[in-house]
Image (tube, rainbow, N blue to C red; front, side):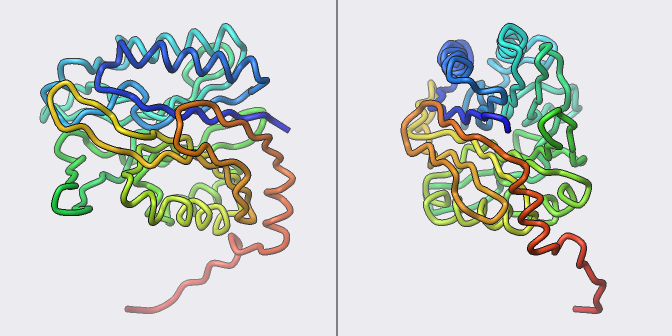
Length: 277
């Protein structure tokens, strides 16, 4: 049994201002007995301005948010999933990486995952996103070993691509992480349904820390996210819901639930080839 903590944030586009809030919530989670703490997508900041992101983002080795949260994990002796950070890359086209980090109790980076699927959508006439213009997609699924289970790492829009989750589960994942900054419109319609579906399809525990509320920008109109950080059991039950306020949501994760669900419906072993279309 492991106590997990889902940290829900309302970040601005200023990493320096966001960091103390995140650290405070991490410490609150530690005080509550959490051994696995998870933050949402783009923990260091949300912005629609590529110029602003280029100004405030750093390469991984120089990122202050990453360094500070590694230090917090080490000081407390806990596992910490930094849902993702926007980081500079050395790519010729100048695009960033949307990178998730799993930090061990010694403060070391155990695993990195670059978000594969880019959020290029037309939610409405006023809600248009082209994530791929600023971020370059990853190309590698990541499964991490921990003492409390095998963790499959994903980020936000990945949630709409079940093949990724099936691949992770068939490779041994027992826990799936889905840190997100889910849009408030699509979140209200799809967030819980998709998370419960991924849990049921894979027989995994799903842990999904989220951004919430209105995110102000220095130059731009800002954006809204859905909140409702969720923990979902392998049978599809919602174990915890973070609501719409920033804070910490605790949940005890028990891998016996994974074994029980997969014993009842062993669909991960029932794949068959087929023809067409």
